[in-house]
Amino acid sequence: MGKLMFLLYFILSVFPADATENRRHIHVIRRGHKKSHRGDTVAKIWIEENGQKKIEVAWSELSADEEALIIEAINKHWKELNGLIDEVFAGKKIRIKRIK
Image (cartoon, rainbow, N blue to C red; front, top):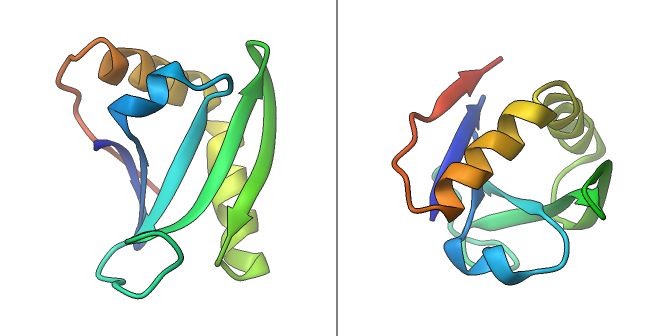
């Protein structure tokens, strides 16, 4: 798993296998949370379509407030997230960013 950013008690990450998918997306993991839909992942959020910014929730177990917080952070840090995803997919080590 490629951890990209920490946001409060969430980890925004990608999985190397996601490199072959049609649209880029981010998995949202709640730190310390074991009971969720798919392992520790509590949401999957699309961040682009055809190379253009398009943020959409694919599925989520988050509250509306948590979703809004994460979408706002993705929107604000979209370029940086894409750069980090490129590095993860290229097999590079990245420094995980903490955002508030």
